[in-house]
Image (tube, rainbow, N blue to C red; front, side, top):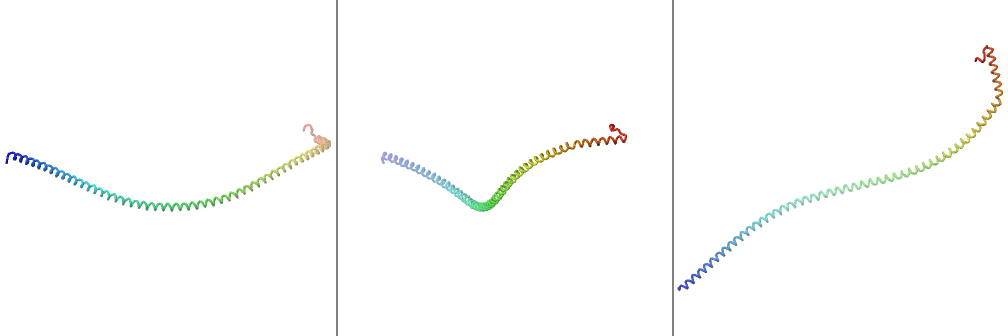
Length: 202
C-alpha cells in the first residue's frame, strides 16, 4: 500500500475513532440525563404519593370533622326544635294568660265604671239634696231672723210700755210711800225712846 494511502487510512481511522469517542460521550451524557430524569421522576412520584397520602389523610380528617359537625348540627337542630316548641308553648300559655287577665281587667273596669256612674248619680242627688236643704235652711234662718227682729221690737215696745206704766204707778204711789215711811220712822223713834235709847246714837 502506498504511504499516502496508509496516511489517509490512518487519518480516516483516527477520524472514525474520534467520531466513535464523541458518540460514546454523547451516549453517556444521554444515559446520565436519563438517569437524572428517572431519579427526578422517582422523586416527583414519591412527592406526589406523599401529597396524595397527606391529601387522603386530610380528606379523612375533614370527613370525620364533617360527620362530627353533622352530628352536632342534628343535635343543635333537635335542641332548637325543642326550644322552639317550648317557647311556642310558653308563648301560647302566656297569650292565654294575658287574654284571661285582659278579660278580667275589662270586666273589672266595667264594674268600676258602673260603680262610678252610680256614685256620681248618688253624689249628684246628695248635692242637690244638700243644696235644697241649705236653701231651706237659709230661708228658715231668714224667717227666724225676721221673727226674732219682730219679737225684739215687740218686746222692746212692751218693755218700754211696762216701764212707763211702772214709773207712772211709782210716781202715783210715791207720796203715799213717803208718808208711810215717815210715819214708820216716827214710830220706830218713839219705840226707841220708850226703851230709853237715843235714835241718834244708833
